[in-house]
Figure 1 (cartoon, rainbow, N blue to C red):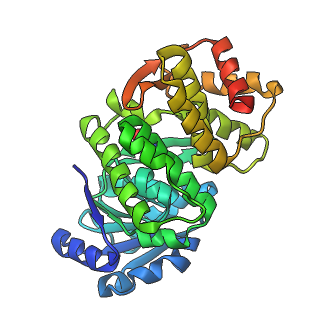
Figure 2: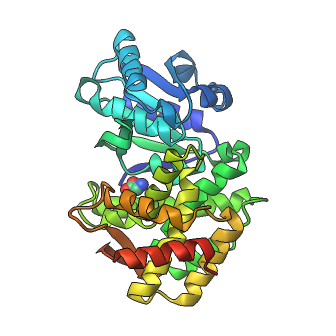
Figure 3: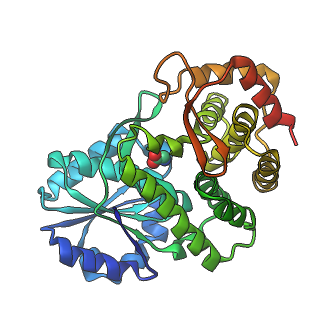
Length: 349
Ligand code: GLY
């Protein structure tokens, strides 16, 4: 299983990793925001102070071929060889793009992820999916390649804004739904407006171990890993609609609303317990509000779902649940059930 290190002294842990891996050169990839806000936490390490810095623009709009080319060029100009190490310090954009740069430079160099957002800690930085956006499509180009280690310091969360905290938490709620009733009810008892960081650290560790255990059984998403797509067929359609209309939408908010829709389908098609759906939907509405759309958007959302890259044939592919922890892969539905699901997301409960 991928090595995950929980620490409040990341520089010391990275020094120890460097001593073990013995790279001939070390490079540190950040974005403009994490360079300013998070890198000082690593400056205690003399090795990292001397590492060659590679800084790219922050946010998903920089998850491009141009940024990737800049990373490759800086590695090449800086004398990186196959025995060099790339440290990726940032959110999911940095760990995805940095991981892909490392996977492809000289056919692959080692990299270590140091996630600084909740979403990256519990999802993006763990499990070996790397990539960039291309041709208007998210994560269109990429590779499976696991980091040598993921160093998680939840102190980074203390400066994360509440919207990004909520965004990451939606993936944690998804992991809890995939796992068991005790973990699920524990997750519904969290107040993200005044977070208890020790409790959050405990939930992060649980969440990462759910993801790790699924990825260990199916690293390249031939079967079980599709469980992690719960809520994402709907979430990706909402994100595409938001993009089309120039609306800002954090990934985790789309996942939270995707959970509402796909639990409705789970209830309707697989008998997921109504009371558990009600409690989950209440938590989502209280924490995330609702995504605003009208029945005029239904055909467009349906069209986005029809073109989802997770589909294998003409059917829209869903991961659904017969109960908390009772996962059903490769589920299909009808257009009219989807329109009922959209009604439910707008007006239900
Ligand atoms: N984010 C889902 C996965 O890593 O498979």
